[in-house]
Amino acid sequence: MLRLIPVCAALLLLSFSLPATDKQADKPLYGTKWKLQSVHNGTHEFTPAGSTAFLRLEAGKNSAGGKGGCNSFGSTVKVEGNKISFSELFSTKMYCEGIQPVEDAYFNALNKATRYHISGDKLVIYQDGQEILVFVAVGDF
Image 1 (cartoon, rainbow, N blue to C red):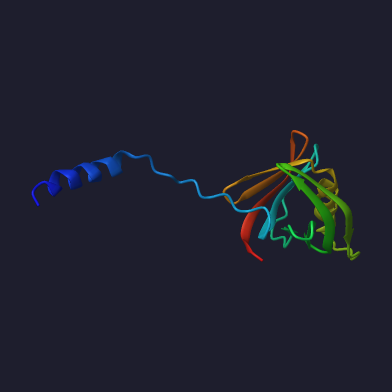
Image 2 (spheres, rainbow, N blue to C red):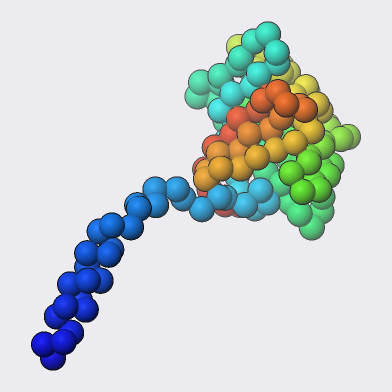
C-alpha cells in the first residue's frame, strides 16, 4: 500500500506538467451547418451582421445548399482532399433590401472556390490562395 503513494504522486505531478489541449476537434465538412461569418471579394469584406446565411454539404448526394441571407440555394459540390468546387448553383429570386449585396458576393464566391480548410469549428474557403469565405459551425443537420 505504501508503494502506491509515490506512484500516485508521480502520476499527479506528471499530469500537471503535460501541456493543456485547448484545441477542439475539427468539425466535419459534411453534416455540419456552417454559418457565414464573412465574404471577401478582393476589394471588400462583407460581414453579414445578424444574417441567417449558412452552408451545408451532403456527401452522399455531392450537393450543397443553404441560405444566402434572403434566398435559399443549392448546388453540386465536388470535394477531393482539400480541394472544393461548387457548380450549377441555383437559388430563389427574391430581392431583399440591405442583404442583397452580401448575398450576391456570397454566391459569387461559392462559384470561385478552389480549396478549403477546417480548424476546430471554423471553415475557410479559398480561391487559390485568397480567403473568400469564412464560416463557423453552429450545429449538425
